[in-house]
Image (tube, rainbow, N blue to C red; front, side, top):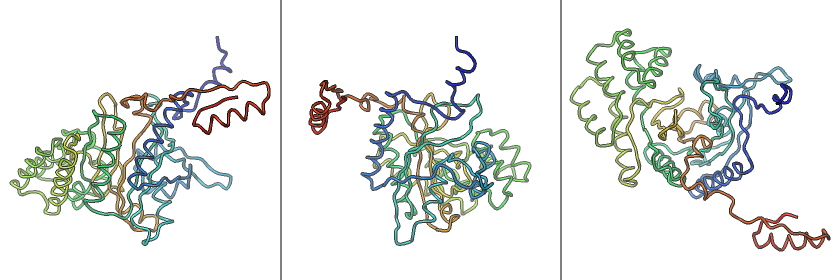
Length: 371
């Protein structure tokens, strides 16, 4: 029976995890394989700081995200935040260091994140992000590059059941920016992402949007379907004639994006999902998430955020994705590919110099040797 004092030694803080030797080896090999894939596409690894000044990022985070951030006060009395999402820390780092002549820039990352989760929601394996950012390449080609790299990543991990849902923050903004205040936009965003269509209808009634428009908006933002079904929806929307003219562009763009992906990767499981409007206010264009059966939330997420680097002084378009690697590691197909297969050789010799010499000769042949 463990005493309370000893039991406390075995506890770890909420939001952290520990790995066994075997798990760590497998995790590192998976990470190495992903970084090699990213590098083959021209994405070079970068490192972001573990903490930074909290007030810098406050305007970029919604209240729900702020509640998950770990904060601390340094010795000078400044309020800091621990890295809860690599994207924001990377945006600041790139925004302060890049110059126009450097563009486009492709970077990748693989790092721990630290965020608070409620105990009933906690999953011990959601705290390591791998991802990429393409900076300085706007439009269809940049978005396609990122989505095709995400598909290649899922293929490498043999996650054949993964489904990518693609939506548009631009569509949401075109439909509602002119008629809703910022606070109402945030509330409507939460309603759409929770897919609560009764509340959606009540909310739009409450801000004096007419019933025919509400019916159209519900038809649009509740839509999930294949590229063919999306084309049918697009045709039906034209027949309504109620959608703001500027909102048609994001729909046409999404149609072209999905058609392009299908022509290159017919087997990729893609869905147009117009309830995917981005979990953070800095998204400006496409947004997407990757889902796996049996998981309670998305394992991959990303999109376009053309104004984010501008917040840090360098205006450049950007698009990228992140994967919560530890969340999906147990689902990776052929996981044994990433296990340590090499035999560990033990050199025994009473003379340490002789043992060391033999071990070095074997190591040069690629063997793992212990003394």
